[in-house]
Image 1 (cartoon, rainbow, N blue to C red):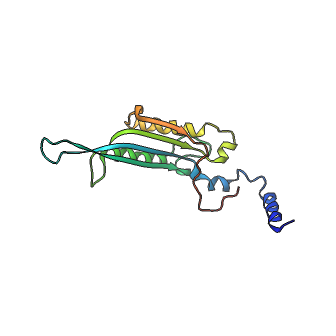
Image 2: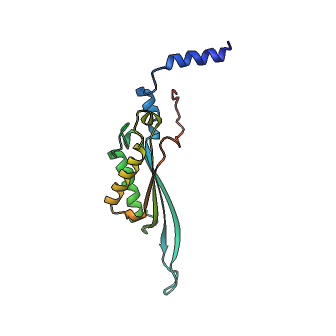
Image 3: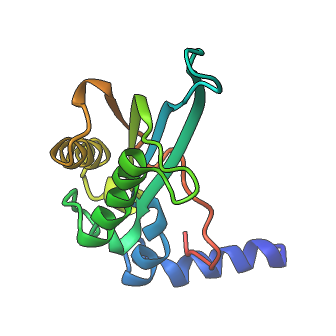
Length: 167
């Protein structure tokens, strides 16, 4: 038997039963997330009185992820996630110091994700629940629900982790 095959067998034997260990759950936490993409425009006032106003296209992206946004296996948005989305709502309504114009929103795409350990434990709709909860939160903050679209991506688009994850 080749040494690499022997090593793989030994590693598999060592790691058996650790599929949902706390270490793995912690390692995969960035994949528990909801990402938001907002398209819209900022209205540029006319350069001269009586001139035509112009629109400047805007694309904003934000994300709430990990333990600060969601507990493992839960779709309930936590305070850390709410804080991230509050920043987005504030930016849409008030702009930034250098450009305080509000953004005219065209669409908001909300994408929910789950990590693979959540899927393995039978929580098939968790990604969609997270996206719907964020949609409800943004609606409560005054954004138009008719402009919001949500989807669930399960664990199909994982975020690469920077530390070793046991598989």
